[in-house]
Length: 241
Length: 241
DNA sequence: GTCGATATATTGTATATACCAATTTTATTA
DNA sequence: TAATAAAATTGGTATATACAATATATCGAC
Image (tube, rainbow over all chains, first blue to last red; front, side):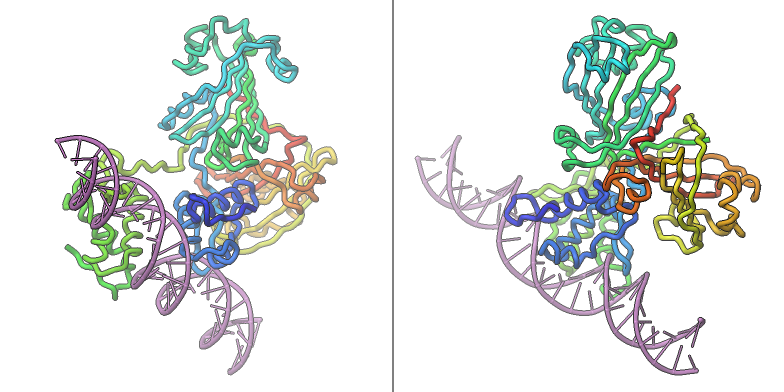
């Protein structure tokens, strides 16, 4: 476990907060479980109770913990700020705007190249436009998205065009493609250092890996996407009927 | 202006909060205006600074005030007040492909007991039948399932009854309930030692944690389930249309 | 065994104090 | 007068301490 340094310019309560958050993210402290008592936190980190309390307090406000007087403090179950329902075939932008979130996308790279074997299998194409984007919702970096689009299906697609509109919009408006359906799988994953930096999360945090293949009406594959979503603020939710 | 009483059972910080809120509402303190400094609040109400701070802090958290170090604390402009996002963003129907596996189930435990706060919140019931099962497909242990069923909805449910039929079937056939819909969230998780043993996986393997709440037509909750699925053999797949 | 009192553990409230950090105001100096 | 330095103001962080309120465990009387 990380240790608290009283010399750092970073406040002690904040350091403790980060430590607790990391333990929650990595399921060292599991949902519903009791965290150390305030006095234990004092002992463990050699800090005063009020300071420990402040760290815990802020996490309670952020919805990660809840307290019960006389019992203890516990990890919250439903801390999902952004629950999502990818019901219909929507892109990220449309989905989030439907929910009145402020979305923002930062294009991290935009290249045209031969694809690796892994991608080729999914995309059924040799050459593709590879796009890497950081998805931001309400100023929270929510996901890292890697998209591959077959070159032959999207000639003239440039970074500028992409910057001005959503990808799904470009498919439909610029190329007049009719998106039909998509298959998506979900797996657990551990963030790489690069990914945790991009998402402002502790190293080796847990996350969800979404793989999506989108098909046109004629069964051509228009895109293959690998997205890594943070799982602290984001909960994937489905409604089963 | 109201005065603070130290005898009342109402906490001092809370009384101050109410006073400040009233002053904001009545435009005694106007939007954008500076409120008394923390040290002034101490003087005025004869309380300690930490107590005054707590009142102000909570109002800042609630979005009614904002602070600027070295300048003071100000009343938030009306627009910005209450930006709070409610987590209940309930959407609409979607389809999930539910593959029906030929499963074998081993009941690991079957108890009737008071539920923890966590479960109570999901189940809206005090006492529940808690069932823990290992689900096996083609001799591969696939998932550990923890189910809670409100006692009042399923009297007489015994381990023997459960062993002879699926839970789903029991709800419909034995109790004649009409299952309506379910909400399910998915998160990444790390297996505990107990879990990895049960699933015959290496320690601390990654897995998916599913939480499901199932509702009857009358909106009663019939079950809450936490399932841990191995992610090597199992891929969660969704078809989006 | 059951009920009730008692002790213990844990969070909640409140105070007093000290010093730090950022900003504004005032005084000093070139 | 304008730039600079010092002081005062104001919120930010941290400690130590005390007692209250609530939940849980323990023990004893019945």
